[in-house]
Length: 438
Image (cartoon, rainbow, N blue to C red; front, side, top):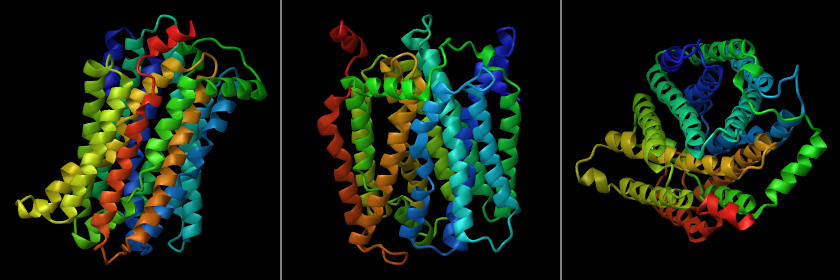
C-alpha cells in the first residue's frame, strides 16, 4: 500500500503513479533500516559486552556487501528477468532482507555472534541489490528526453524525502522500543515489513514505469561501457574525490556511542530522538535543496558541507571538554541537536552529488555507474571506520577511559578539511563540461 502523501498526490492526477509507489515505498523502507540497526548497536554493547573498537569493526564489516554494488549494477543492467531488469532485483533484495531478519527473530537465544554477523551480511546484501536497482531507476528517469534538470532533481529530492521520512519514524520507534519490547519482536516486525515490500514490488510490472527503452547487452559489453564511462575525467575525478572525502576521515562512531551511553549515561530514548532530529534535518535539507539550491554549483554545495562537518566535529571537541556544560547546556540537549545533525551531515553531500553524476552518466550504463559510486562510498566508509579504530587505539580510548577522545576529535576535524583543498576535481558546471566536449 502506498503512503498517504503519494497516494493523495497520484489520486489528484487521476490514478496511482507506479514509479512513485515503487520508489517511494522502496526508499522509505531503505530509510527505515535504521530501526533494527539502532537495536543491533545496543544488543552488541549490552548483550555481547563488546568494547568500542569491536563494535565499530562489526558495524563496518557488516557493510562489506555494499562494496559489491558495481557487480549488482552490471547484472541489473545486462540480465533481464521476464523482460524486466529493475523490479525483479528490488523484489529479490527485499526477499533476502526479510529472510535474514525473520531468521534472527526466530533463532534460539544461544545464537553465536558469528551466526548473527552472517545474517547481518545477508541483510545488507539484499539491501545493496535493492538500492542499486532503485538508484538505477532514478538515474534512468533523469535521462529521458522530456526530463529537464529540474525534474531530475525533483525525483532525486522525492526519494531523498521518502528515505528521510523512513529514517525519522525508524529512529523514533527504535529509541522508544528499546528496553520496552524484546529485540526479537522488533526484528520480527521489521522482517514482516520487508515481506510486505516484497509482495508490493512483485505486483508492479516494469512496463508501467515508463523507463527508457534500452536493449539487453551482455555483461562483458556492459563492463566495457562502464570502463569507458569511468575513463571520462569529469566522472573519474568526481567519484575519486567524493570517495576520498569519506575515506580520509577516521570515524569515531563506536567511541562516541560508548561515551554517550556509558560515560554520560544518555538514555536510549534520547539517542533515538537525536537520530530523529538528524533525519528531520535530512528531510529539511532535501526540501531546501529541491526548492532553493538546485541551480547552485554542486562543487560549492559539497565543499560547504565538508567545512560544516569539520565545524561540528570541533564542536564535539568542545563538548567532550565540558565547554557547553559550563554554559549550562544539558548533555542530552547537545546530543539531540548537534550529534544528531553531525551524523547525517556525512550524507548531505550525496543528494547534490547524485544529481551531478546522473547528469554526467552516459546513457545505457546508469545502473553500473551509480552502483560504482555507491560502492566507492561504501568502501570509503569502511576504510573510515577502520581508520577510526586505529585512531581510537592510538589515543588509547577504551570503554572506561575517554581521556584521549578530545585529541581524537581534533585529528578527525583536521582530516575532514583536507578534501576541501582539492575540490576542483568536481565539475563546477555540467553545461560547461558539455561545451568542452563539443
